[in-house]
Amino acid sequence: MTREEVRTLLAQLLPEAPVRFEPPSPEAWKALEMRFETEFPDEFVYFIDLMGEYDFPGAIYSVSDEGRTTFDAPIGFVYDQEVELFRWPPQFVPFYGIGNGDYFALNREEGRASRVYYRDHEDESMSEYSPSFAAWLEQLGDFLGAPGTTRGSV
Image 1 (cartoon, rainbow, N blue to C red):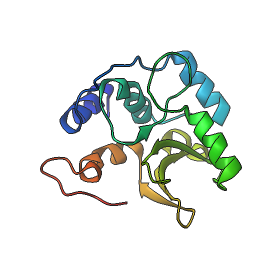
Image 2: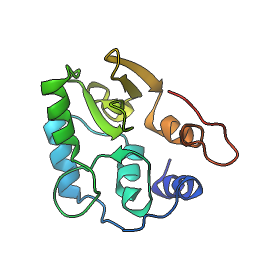
Image 3: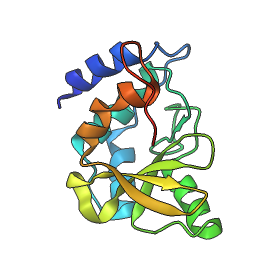
Image 4: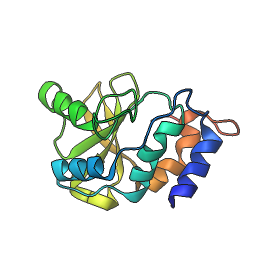
């Protein structure tokens, strides 16, 4: 998917954000990739870059704590907390907190081809949710219960 395809999809599913934020800087993206020793899927980068334009339920974590990119905590901070306190598998990078202790994450060992994983806080399991970030985006309407779709489940 291109950046514009991601934007079009998000515009169909989400209301505009009441307060707009700037996308993360290229330097912030580079620092995050260096920290996790990986490269993220293009669609993930586009999605996070565009999150400053849309109101998304739950917590989409920011790339860094520089500037005003979201209201939510930085990915690295959430990762550190989860690894330290909740036996988080270290190869997974959380990017979306649903709000009940469950997360969506990417596998840094899979790099740009990472599948999207779901972390269930009750049994601490990590399971594949989507075969790619693009596929995760295409399933968002079901997950969010957008008009014309049924409310999905994880």
